[in-house]
Image (tube, rainbow, N blue to C red; front, side, top):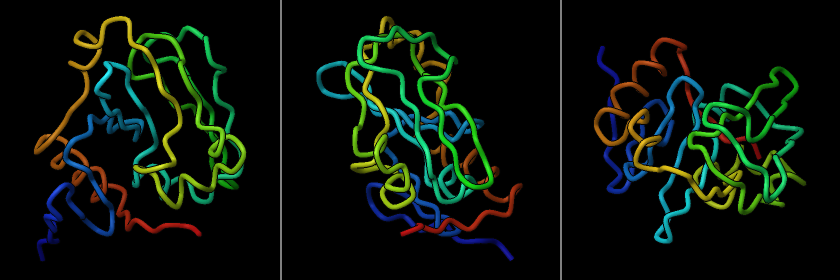
Length: 158
């Protein structure tokens, strides 16, 4: 039986996992990127990522002013069953870290696409770096494939 994708307007929902339409994704690492009006970017963990990790207990985020290379860790997250890096999706400089997430990483499990973003970065060459990310229908297809492969049903830990 084919599982249903719900179109919620600004996002899709599949197996309980929310996939906002306006974000760019690195599906392998389950990290999202939003391009802000001022040309900076905001990054966070996807709904699928927070579900697979479980209740997040620790977050170490590179400090403001740190120069990050694309693909290198900009943060490290830990849960009771998982620890792993959050790779920078662009080369640039850390402009702001989400202090609420560094103090209470479990906030990502509650609101992964909203107020629980992880870091804001000023990119060196956004146009170059964003080419490796996916968006829209392509993102939905790859996220669905990932969800099906890992048999994921997203849940929010409160």
